[in-house]
Length: 117
Image (cartoon, rainbow, N blue to C red):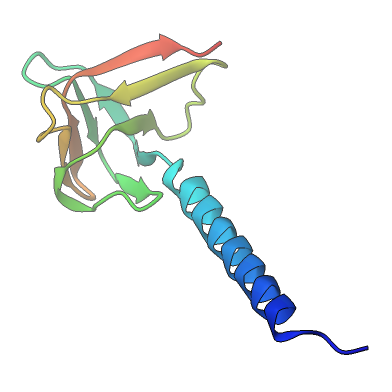
């Protein structure tokens, strides 16, 4: 039994489309990893939305220094958030969500706590 060149070309197109789809799904899955900072202490001073201090660490690709340019979470080390509760810093404008200066501190702008359902 011989496979025609047309059938080979059709199978190649299907294979390439499937590979592209899997690559897209993998990139979407990794994009869902919200940047997170974990610090020894978390405070809510008046001049910023939230401030993490002491031995701060970045997770999920969050920058260690400089401006934070997307939504992120800020957690206190050793303290599990209440089930269904999330602290999120969404920024006061599209250009500024916070400022990182690890390991000393992380400032978050426009931060709040909300309940997940």
